[in-house]
Length: 164
Image 1 (cartoon, rainbow, N blue to C red):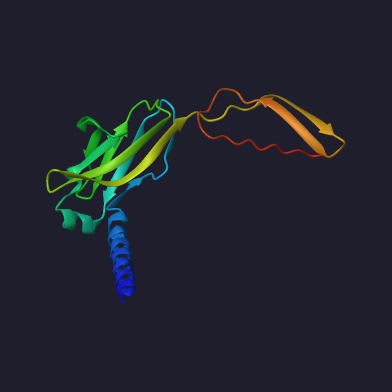
Image 2: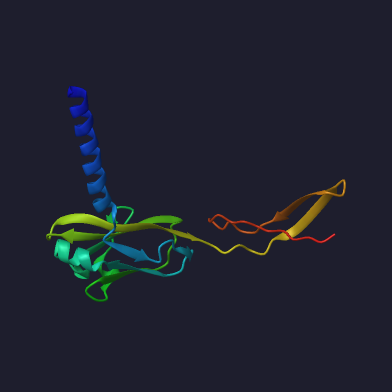
């Protein structure tokens, strides 16, 4: 009997924990674009849109949004409140290869809560490859080499098409 009671208690605890975590994990809003890749040295703007239920639950609006990059607050001069649910942040001359961007709210005036986060990647578009040379082994295997140009700082895939 005691083992059954312990098992039921553990099952109830796991169920309640899972249910509450499900509520916490659902984001209060989103950052757009969600997976940004920008050209290095260019300007970039992101927006954070709060869900209506979070405005009511935490007594906030877009003026309570705090933007952060790599856990550091973004200066207010870079932030614009668009309307009661939406705030934007603009970065000029993006030179860092990777930046963690988060949208946070100050709920109840002082408790900071993360709304959403994304990683902003910056790099260069690939150059047109030069010095392409290929060797065919036994009429079926082809091995090619080329100069890809400058570093892109991004994952870059090349596709070679050939006709025989």
